[in-house]
Image (cartoon, rainbow, N blue to C red; front, top):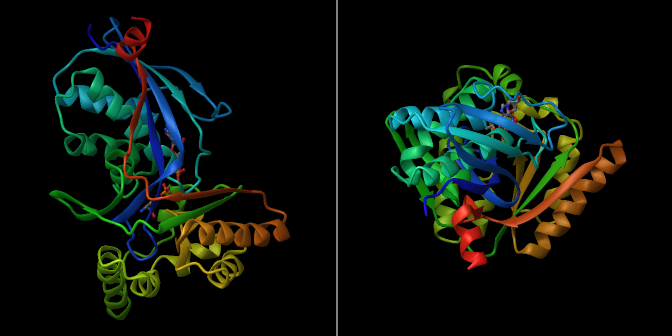
Length: 321
Ligand SMILES: Nc1ncnc2c1ncn2[C@@H]1O[C@H](COP(=O)(O)OP(=O)(O)O)[C@@H](O)[C@H]1O
Ligand SMILES: N[C@@H](CCOP(=O)(O)O)C(=O)O
């Protein structure tokens, strides 16, 4: 039986991880986006339905990340296959949890499977990056790489693309708090300065190297000392009400470190143990409760799986036998 229909989930992500602007990111278990892809004989890639976006997202396949990545993938493999896409959005747009990237990762992973997996997961990453270009004008990979490959990823180089997966300690848990305000990645990139003073660069690359060493050596003290961003956070935190108070509350509640998730407004902390991660989540929530801003809380280990197949016409037919 040929694969004609597939439904795939891809996870939300925390990009930057404090010191690693555009180079570090990790996946969490939930939330995430789902896509359903069905082969058609139209020869076109179409977004036929979007559920859960409140009507905010474009259904034009050239404007929605899910459509853009499938088109880029089909073109690269020289296929004229028609594909209909149903997108289930489970994340608000402009959340800082890699909402646009989760759609891209799910869609390109599903398309590759539907076409018989001609390419590896690493080979389809550049198509997922094209989704980010549409979403925010920059083809950064620090959300799409962990969403597509799972785990904690480091982009050593963009040209040529060189992605490294980093092992993390089992006891490491992330807290992600989404205050219900919107920050568009495009806008949050525009306010950044194009140049970095040497003293700040020295401090930042020291932190990136040490964070990776801390993760690999399971050295929580080193992880904690390295979760510091002296370049991006001082600028972007000005956009985020309650940021300083939330940071203080998270650190007092036992977080190893705290920062902006992606371009915000979501905030993240890394913690030793699930219990601490939950305590930290509630400490941050209290700050936002005090400001009258609603929050969604997520606590998760680093998701190692990346995308998962929820169903397909093959799995459906296997069930009916
Ligand atoms: N499938 C999609 N999911 C989310 N955003 C999308 C999608 N397709 C296009 N976009 C556009 O991307 C922008 C949101 O992306 P971004 O600001 O990076 O949010 P996030 O930080 O949640 O990823 C919006 O302008 C939205 O219209
Ligand atoms: N490195 C990017 C990451 C943006 O993440 P998002 O989840 O806010 O889209 C940046 O910081 O601009």
